[in-house]
Image 1 (cartoon, rainbow, N blue to C red):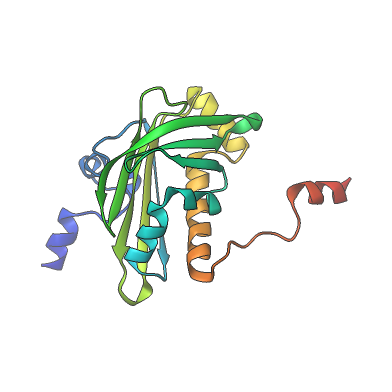
Image 2 (image 1 turned 180 degrees about the horizontal axis):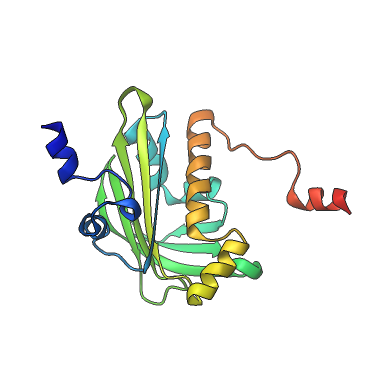
Length: 192
């Protein structure tokens, strides 16, 4: 019986789903051709993690490239994010689906610098806490070249999603995000 259940539902992030129809179903309002999925287990309750994430102003505390999130109303927010070359990109996002303690899905509104959508899911992991699964679909500005440049500058969503979830785990389990004792500028200064 357990085998039948696992065959009918793939618990992997949408980007790694065995069946593409399940990946598409996971992002009903998918906006963007590139899909990134990452997961992390955090030793905290689903409700606690959901509540922290749902206050979008909290996201700047662990999302490295997010400069700010302005809450417009209960369903919409304005995002300002660092891009390669010292630029920033902006968009308005709206919540497309929400289940308290379980998931938040969003999509960028028309006119976004980066068309994107996604969902963050909170799944019970028993005594281990909660599995947090982030799935993001996006269109990089500049197409394949823009994606390559973003990777070079460590600003590509696949890289950032992994790092941001790791920092979210640190923050929620320890109350702080670990940083190096020296900044990149300080390290480069020492090399010179």
